Every structure is written in C-alpha cells, then in structure tokens.
Length: 253
Ligand SMILES: Nc1nc2c(c(=O)[nH]1)N[C@H]1C(S)=C(S)[C@@H](COP(=O)(O)O)O[C@H]1N2
Ligand SMILES: [Mo]
Image (cartoon, rainbow, N blue to C red; front, side, top):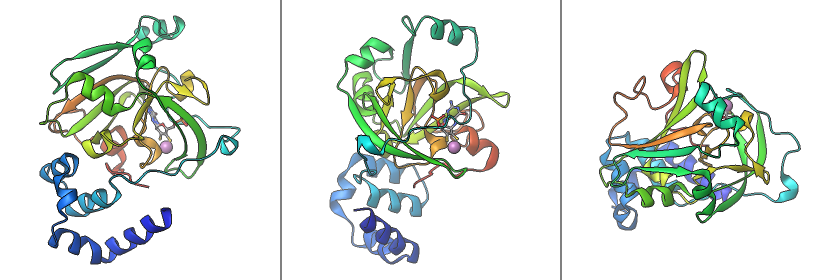
C-alpha cells in the first residue's frame, strides 16, 4: 500500500498523474464534498491533487508489540495559565472542550462525553520534523463525529485547534482542512498507550492527524473552531510554526 502511494507521489512530482487526474475529470473524487471544498478553498493545485490521491488512504497502523518503549515529549511539556493548572490538579473533572465557530450548535464537551462517544484506537508512527519518530497507541473520538454533533456548516473550510500552552511567549495553535478533518484516523486522543494522556503529551486532549508531521498534532487542545478562512487567526498562516519558521501548512508525510 505505501509503495503504491509512494509511486503515485513520484508520478505527481513529474506532473504526469497530476495533469491527467484533472484533465480526465475524476468524477468520483470530484463528487466528494471534502475534495470539492479543498478545491474551492483556492489552495494550490499541487496540494489539492496530492490530497485527492491520498484521500481515503490510511496511515500505516502497527501492532502492540511495535509500540516504542519511550515516546519523547516535544515542544511544550506543560499547559499554561491558572485555569489549566487547576483543571490538571482536578483530573480535568470539570473541564470541557469548546467546539464553536461555523457550527449550528456550539458545544462544551466534558471529558466524560468524549469518552462516551464511539472510540477509535490506532497504533501509528509519529514523525517529528526534527528527525525522530516514535510509535504509540492513541484513542479517542473521531473529529468528524464531533463536527457532526456540533452541526458544522458547509461553509467551514478549516478546523482550528486552540491550545492551552505558551511556547516561546506565544500560544500554540494549529489547523487542518476538511479532507483531514473527516479522515477516519483523525481523532482527538485522550488516551495514549492505554492511559489518560499525561501533561507532557498534551493532557487532556490532543489531535492525531496521522498523515501529517508531528507539529500538526496539536496538544493541550481547549477549543476547536470551524472557519471559512485562516485570515485573522494569530499570524494567519494556520499554525504556530507556520507563522514563525515557514513550516509548510500541509505537512504530508
Ligand atoms: N500545543 C502544542 N502542541 C504541539 C507542540 C507544542 O509545542 N504545543 N509541539 C508539536 C511537535 S513539534 C511535536 S513533534 C509533537 C510532539 O508530541 P509529543 O510531545 O507527544 O511527542 O507535538 C506537537 N504539538
Ligand atoms: Mo515536532
């Protein structure tokens, strides 16, 4: 499977398949709302083409015996602010995830509600742009289920994740488009390797967006916001590192 994807990517790079996909009008893909919204959001052709081909492709999943004995914590290892510290001390008993923006029903979802939703568990490899990887097991509800619950608007083109930590003096945040938001392996994990997330790995909730690099996997997620544009959100480039270091907004692996 991954070989197939690699060879497809190689083809895209040469422009062969990228061109024919669009010229031949790939009807099935085009009918998919996620693909259409990706196109309509005016993103560059290369990314959209790559996304269309990868759409539906799953990141590789591993076995329990593959789980790394040590999974390094990177970036922020703690949440910031009195509210966060209080919730941490209380085991996030009265904490709730905020879901708002372009939704019909803004929600405040306590951890219990997130745990009571249908769960997905996956053992995947995390790849950090700094050059390390680790395999871990993640569990939580699908982002798509949360968005459905909130009644996300068809006008929404991005999902923004607001985090509780401050890194280098600024709040961390990230964003993804609807293709990744609806992907079956995109979950909000409250459990890691069979235990509730610890603080260093982003308690109480973090994003897993398995087909992208580590920095997209927002930890300490407090609020999920559906938006039509990333303009006006912090630096406007869709993520903490995207604003600072020019990291790619779409960090496909
Ligand atoms: N809120 C927040 N999320 C974050 C970061 C961060 O500093 N703050 N670092 C990112 C980076 S670069 C990586 S590699 C992973 C690290 O996740 P881990 O600490 O569980 O290894 O989290 C990502 N998500
Ligand atoms: Mo990273």
